[in-house]
Image 1 (tube, rainbow, N blue to C red):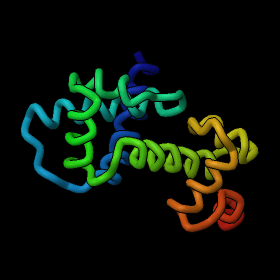
Image 2: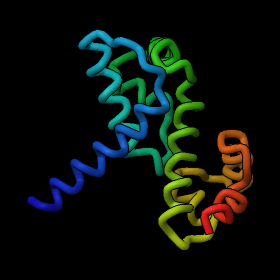
Image 3: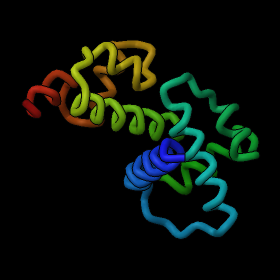
Length: 136
């Protein structure tokens, strides 16, 4: 039971962090439910490869309709948003772990270290190594 509570709290904290990535817009009840399902799926699967088809299925929309729905509500494409989520997770791991940068990249869902470094610098304005060195 205690483990279940901790898992719910952890997911709640992660959803709160995700909420910061989304512009504050008023959602209808059905839109809010749909976005909640999408965000929960993204959180639970962000370390894995996620296809547009998979996330569109979670939202019960076609790929095209999902892309429009998601962009209108977040101001970002699904890929941009997923990259930001993964970078956020990488930042947490850079703070909390002693893992190498390549381990963190793969643990955060990136399949290519070079792409991780480019994406990290684009989002954070510095490389993962520079980011970590500022914390010491």
